[in-house]
Length: 192
Image (cartoon, rainbow, N blue to C red):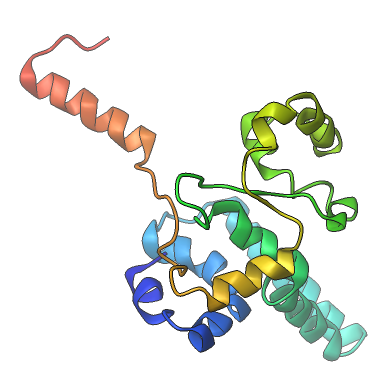
């Protein structure tokens, strides 16, 4: 999160607002935290999206693109399935940085709830992640997990120890590698 997010969204009412606006933060935060020069693919994406929404408003009704935008905000904000955005990478239990969800919504979300399994085996299809859990249950059963994404959202909002800063943030490996290389060159060490 940005420093502003972490400092401002520090009470239950403000965290409700943050959850509602979560898709905007996901979209805008990278532009602030780690800005990059746009590439032609991003420009093409913007033009195509704008043209589609303009055509939708012109040929169907202005309510159609409003519906698309509102459903995106709601579907990624204060919606039960959106709880996976929070459960995946916020620290709810000290010592565990990501959590799986084993509820029925996995049936309609392509098993996105099997998040620990996904991290351990990122190339395994979501369809097969329940089998990974079954085969390696001795590793996954002791881990904290959820059976309600709505409960995750509720916990995030009401628990005082949770907020935008309740995340693990790692240093960028590429930056560290480049820094190490620069240090090696400056110190006269051989660089492979």
